[in-house]
Length: 159
Image 1: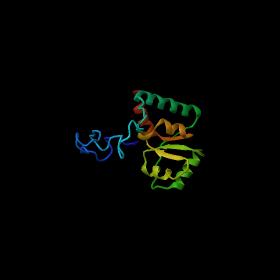
Image 2: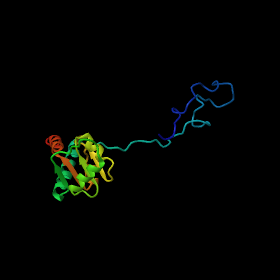
Image 3: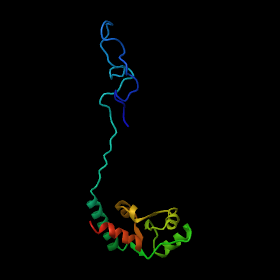
Image 4: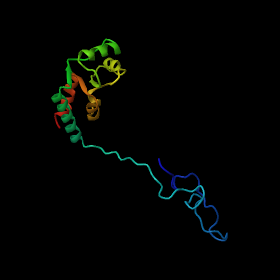
């Protein structure tokens, strides 16, 4: 948050002593920066440097990254990723069959598949709504199901 200015320091609502006749300098608050336990003048204040990237640029970046994955042969499309019950072992075996050795991003709508993949090292499960450029760039392989591709195409069609 940063330091507290005179408005943020607790107390100081009452005039500490009367205006005239005390021989002291006039004062309106005991939380003045001049006083002990007073506020800090022009102290460091925390602020966010976040920048919202325009939607069209985000979608263009997503198209660019996906086309790069296709060109480099790191996009693996499967019919569907379904599991009867969550099983990390069977998900590891499935990914090994697909030729995924290192970091992979698994895009699926199946909750059991997400639960199966989340405990594997280097594998991040997500769905089409949670897909972002950073994750795609950060993972070597992109394993995606047909239904999720349809959702992505639907979003990227108007960009």
